[in-house]
Length: 92
Image (cartoon, rainbow, N blue to C red; front, side, top):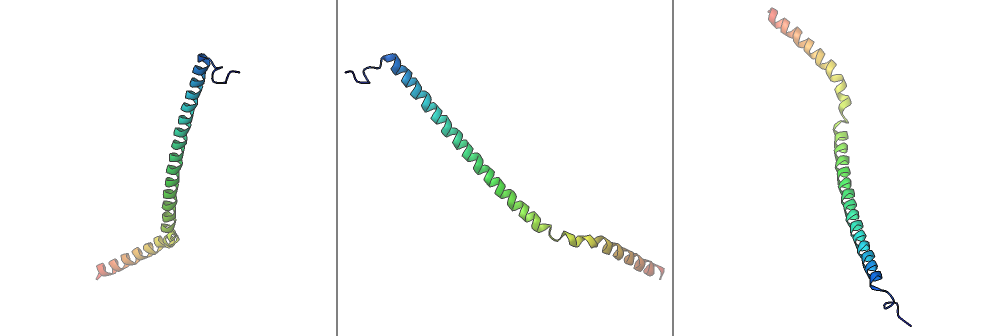
């Protein structure tokens, strides 16, 4: 009885080598794409962390904005008072 290795002719060996080579190339491409995907995910994660930090700081900076609502009316009243004082000093 012939063994399996001797029953394969040279043309079949070439096909097997081509199939193994293509499989190796496919594995290398998959590894490269997975590495690229991993780097992209890490980059997105870092940028999301930075965005989260910036938005938290922005929220902290804008918590007192409601206090500025009355500032315009107070400044208007102060300006009118200063005008009255200026007129009083100018008339002396």
